[in-house]
Image (tube, rainbow, N blue to C red; front, side, top):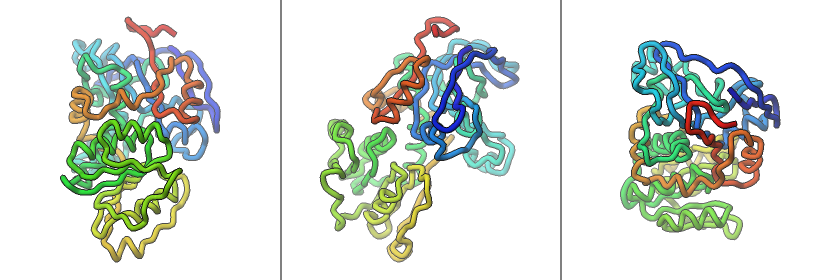
Length: 337
C-alpha cells in the first residue's frame, strides 16, 4: 500500500509498505478521506512535536472496513465509517470514571502515533462509527473536528439568548459559530481576518461578523461566552478582555508559545477558563450532525485533493485554503493510486 510520512521539519515523503492485518477487536480500514488540520501543519513545520519522524500523520479520517480481526463481526466489511482517532485502554482510572480522553495509556492516531496518511490503517472496531449512505467520505472526515467542537460546547453549556463571540475564522471557528447559532445564543459574533470566510458565516445566519483587518473589536463590548479558536497570544488575550463578568472562555486554539494573561481580571470578574480537546462521549451525536447537515461541513471543505498529491494539499492548507481534504477515488478494496 502507499503511504506518506512526515520525515522532519518541513518535509514529507511517500513510500510503499506491506498492508497490515487487524488483530483481535480491530478492523482494517480502507482510508477514503483525510482532512488536513492545523495540528498537522504545526507538526510538519516542527512547532509542536508530540511524535517523532518518520511517521504518517492524519487524524481526520473516514473510510470503509476492508477486513476484520478476531472477535469482530465480518458482516461489517464494507461498512462506511468515520473514526475516533483516540485509542484508549478502557482500564485506567480515567477510562473507568468516564473521562477516557485523559487515559494514561491513550494514543491518538496521527498525533501521538502513526495516522491515516496511508491507504489502509488498523483501528479498534469500537472507534468506528457508521455514517449514513448520503454522507460523503469527505464530509465524514470532518467528524473529528466536529467532535472536539461539540465536546467543548458541552462543557460550557451555551444558553439561549446569551451573547457569544468566536475569535477565529478557520474551520473550527466556523463550526463553533454555526453550532452556537443553532443552540440559541444571540447574538453570535464571529471575528476573523478573511472576508470570504466571514461571508460564509453570514450566509449561515451568524448575526454579526467582524473583519479584524478593517476594525478592532469594540473594547467596551462584553460576551457571556467566548471561544478562542486561533491559539495566538493576541487572540487569547482578546478573548479574556471581551469576557463579561462571570463569563466562560473556551481556549481551543493550540498555542505554540507561552501566553501572558490578565489574571487579575480573570480572578476579580470571576471568568472561567476552559480547555477544549477530545470528547469521546459525543461521537454518536456527531454522526447525527453529519446526517442532518446541521454542521455545514460541505460548505467548509474548500479543496478536494487526490491522496497522491498530499504535498500539494499541505501547500494549499498552509497558504489560505479553509479546509483541505485528501481523497481516494476507489470502487473496490484497492485504491487507484
